[in-house]
Length: 208
Image (tube, rainbow, N blue to C red):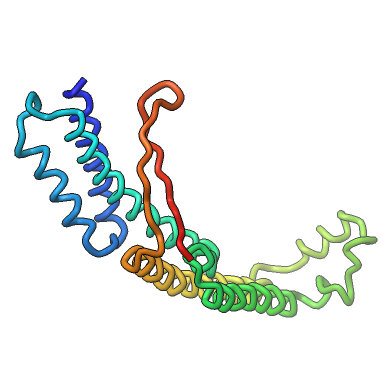
């Protein structure tokens, strides 16, 4: 049983280390992880008690949760600018990034629409009352060159949104690390038998 727990803890530590390398981890997590690994590597398996294993597993789980929290916030803002800020409690930043994202989306759609060939715009085509065959005929009546301006605006809009998402993700990740450093968010490991096997649940508490 101890050997199994030892392997489990080592796997958790390896996963946490991989996550730390993939996403910029909160300050000090690498040191925490190294200290936890040194504790179990310095002792023989037969001399480790259950309390020792739980202690080390707890430290590893906290490090893993910190990394996962920052990564979750970063990815949320990358996909939807402003989302990560709302998760970290930065309502003002989240609102500004969301407004910027909506402005880019609206500008892209409007710009792309007005650059469509005139006979495809609402002024000349009633899409609700015109037959699909007529609409398809008008669409196929234009060359790729006719659609290039619209494609260009759509591509530009996607690029701008990607840039905004990047800056939003960087800012959100920074706020997440600050929350951890300031103690605004805490992580509580909870061990239990869940489902078919042994599993570690992670609890996150936000202090506002």
